[in-house]
Image (tube, rainbow, N blue to C red; front, side, top):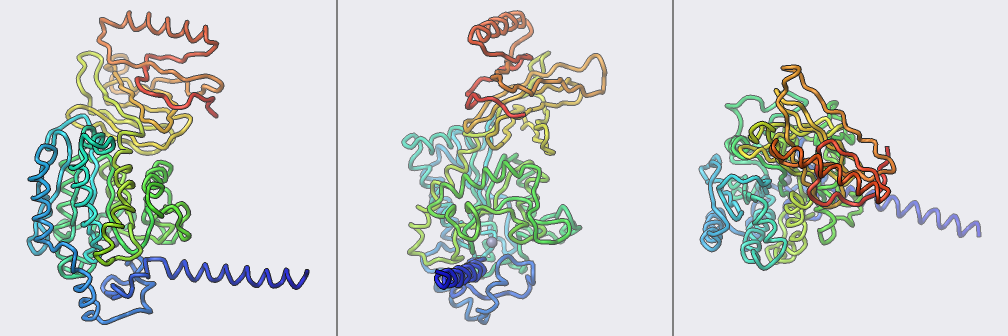
Amino acid sequence: MHEALTIFHILFLFLNFSSVFLSSYARGGLHQSNHSGYVDNNYGGSIRRLYAEKNFLVSEEEHFQKLEKLAQGYMSNSDLEKAIKAFNGRCSNISRIYSIGESVLGVPLWVMEISDRPGEKEAEPAFKFIGNVHGDEPLGRELLLLLANWICDNYMKDQLATLIVDNIHLHILPSMNPDGYSLRKRGNANNIDLNRDFPDQFFPMNDDLDSRQPETKAIMNWLEEIHFTASASLHGGALVANYPWDGTEDRKKNYYACPDDETFRFLASVYSKSHHNMSLSKEFPKGITNGAFWYPIYGGMQDWNYIHHGCFELTLEISDNKWPHASELPTLWEYNKMSMLNLVASLVKTGIHGRIVSSDRGRPLPATITIRGINYTIPASKPFADYHRLLAPREKYEVIATMPGYRSKSACIVLGEAAMTIDFVLDPETTHPGSQLIVDSDCYFENKTSLKVLELLPRAHLELSIVLILILIFLCFLMNRKVISNSLYQRQSIGPKRPAVI
Ligand SMILES: [Zn+2]
């Protein structure tokens, strides 16, 4: 018996060591090292994953030749441009194309916008996909063309495609780095890693506008033009959905949570759970990871999106093999299809949405939305003052709408899996000019059901709303439930009705 236990222990230890070895082997998609194991020393230690490939160094020339072979069956830059234009020609009723700038070598950075009203402003959230950030990670650019065409072909036939087209403005940039792609290398034509070229929150880097790469500038200007609620960039070399923060203040490899850690874990899980096998990862529990926990990077696009533009960006590593054989593309599309669609659709299927208007003239207000306990502010979009606040389902949130010169209002909600709409009507501040009054709300509804009432009612109908509220309270009293009301009305499903935990 004792011997059997010892053998068992030895076997157990061996298996554990094996898994450590395998996970470090797999990290960074070492599986593709036969294809793209060349390490460009220009990127030094900052490069993601490639350090693991050191044992497989090949010459630059050999590496280039291998990628040249693999590129057969992939679209060239001119093929891509033709495919984008062909898509737009075929789906002109629900798309438009535009360029956000040019690469170092003058290749246009084409974007496809998909919406029932492309190019128009609507009170809808916008999502962006960016592919091919790294020149030698071309899978994203192929999948994004497949995605655009699939939505086009299935609009008004498939529920998800129709939901996306009708309710979201989806912008797709298949290649952020066309020069790197044609040169078969990670960086752009100036050999700069574009995912290290953004301003950083912890270290003064990339702050000089003149030295910023044209591809990076194009993205930064793009976000000045369009307010994106969420986005994802597509990479290769691993299989995981990566979320902020990407860096740490002390440069140490640690879990470094951003204010919306819970929301990001939820969003990353939307992708990994819908994927063929991402959530089954042995290296990354549930197929998701905090960027800094994996390994810190600085000057990345993901953190910059969240910090500077209220855009919840994920960095999606969609294949261990950076440059899979072209014959695998249809399979990889099938593996990622539902993930991509569900991630985009999560913009309207989850979270809190609504508009913020003034009570005096019903004007849209450029107000902000905050959630008590989360140190992050979402601006309402112009010109309709619609807001789209992504959040993980939770039993209690306090949502606060704030606007200088107006009295703030808050709503307590139970957020289930489904999205919620909460419109805010703010009253001009008259009693204490210049000060911000937070309306106290009773967020402690233990053993109660929360029903908040807020409606876009003109003042003339206020009396009617009070009567309606009283009737509601009376009805709920009859049902032996308490109603909390301070003029807030929840128009959609409020999720599962269960006692909140304080
Ligand atoms: Zn990459």
